[in-house]
Image: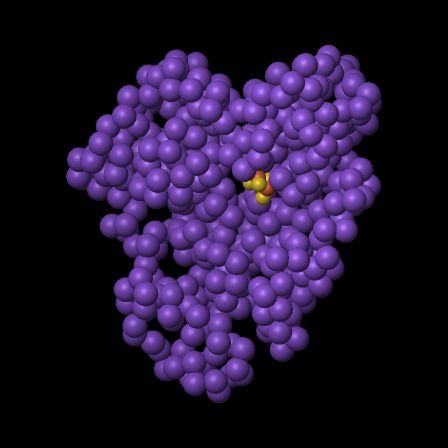
Length: 393
Ligand code: F3S
């Protein structure tokens, strides 16, 4: 790999041993993927956020980085953490997060400023064509597919190494030709809803694996819907970029999406396929639902408002937890708006935590396809979740 004089100087350890180690990690990664050079990044996002004891090796490295006084060079956020509202209800969970305080202190010391899986709602919103180093599969797919910025699916510590050095190896989705679509999904469904789109995401992930899907036939789809669909594809498969024709900036039409080539495969999507996904990924419990969480990925302001409007005049049943999960900025917006009264009157709770960090008690219900890939949750649309919370199963 070509290295600049400045990079060689860092590698030689002339700017400290830790900086040299972090750059070496990126150079070795780049060499293994055939990268020609390192490129500058504008933004980073890490998943080194939650302090369960099994992350102790990574937490030790982060602690050394913070101890040496190194700081991130670009806007850097991290995935959600357990927050106060959540812990009040579920004290016992906190005892499992032994490394949480240390991680938070170290992340804050190096300059990480927000804890969410939707950093683009917290001022970490890269622009079209910007190179980034993001972990968190649901955020990476949004970055590539909606924002038109560029990131590979990074991992914990690699993301920190990039944030500190401001660089990432030039390979994978940073390169134009690697962003070419592979599989065409033709959606022949009129009037689809968000739930059908998240089920579509599951199907796309299963078929595409780590290839790049192109979706034709989604008229008037919102960015939030693409967010939820993409998160599902990134969970049931390893998809990091979906070209949604008319939404993805570099896929204005089918020719752009396939870069003038023809699809390797074409899949016709119908309602039956989506129903299959719903059945496959939903866990049906015999007992009554006790815990419902909406917001995986975390909700936008518009999504939260829409749910609270649906909850106006309704009350969550005794013995049921009903969570709205969103980033701090959206949470604070609710606290300071007229919607706070609906929140309080309804008995719902709002948290900046990840519902998967503590999806207890069971049975657990969600509208999130991603949550259903990773946990034994009942998979329903938002209206069914609200009905269950307020009227029972
Ligand atoms: Fe976000 Fe947690 Fe889901 S990090 S995407 S809410 S699993």
